[in-house]
Image 1 (tube, rainbow, N blue to C red):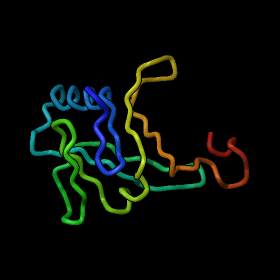
Image 2 (image 1 turned 60 degrees about the horizontal axis):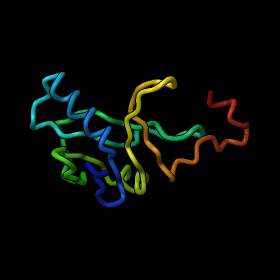
Image 3 (image 1 turned 90 degrees about the horizontal axis):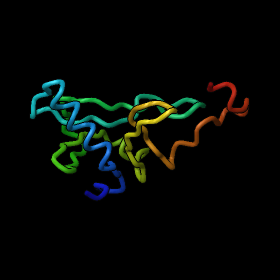
Image 4 (image 1 turned 180 degrees about the vertical axis):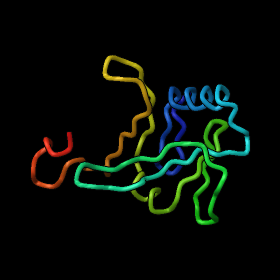
Length: 116
């Protein structure tokens, strides 16, 4: 299986596998799509949204990736362009990770300590 890319947003095979596993384990209905977005942004970087959602405003973009319907609002879409959603298990923790070239991380000038 290759990375699934649509309009510069990529979901790795590991992330797709875990999303589908969670959907089955939690008995998520097929009519719910995967919501990806940005909740807020601060000097410490963005807070990402990832979850199943039935409500889809007409302005959302709809992506079809490897059996997943993905909803993303236009503002989040612009910020997430070029991003990759990954899933990893390891000593640093287990979970989903966004690798986003548009998220500059801590930019308040106080150094990275303010964001930890």
